Length: 138
Image (cartoon, rainbow, N blue to C red; front, side, top):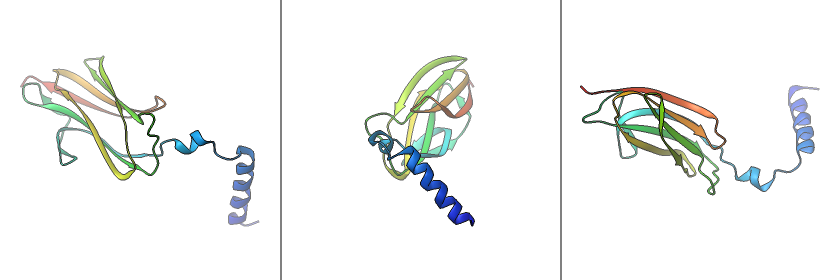
């Protein structure tokens, strides 16, 4: 049996065992994270001045997320951003996304002096990415 026939045979067996997709399974999000970064700003839905160093007096920290989504579940947030400053969770924010090959979303926080970390989780709570950053007074 050649590779193509073997693959077709195995897919047929998997489909028979798994059964038809449930309505919930078809509604799940299938986004691919293309970019996750920290920046000093966002303009025209694009990050400006990507950075991991910020000034407390003048900067805000932006966590920018770029996705490729062909299917989303509109009934629940697809992602969650967690902000950690100096080892403590400061805030979490749910992110809802839409269907697009270039969906962009972000969250913003004041630059609190010290060590920071912004984390990206999927809807099931799996850590997908994290970006460390530092905020100084000068």
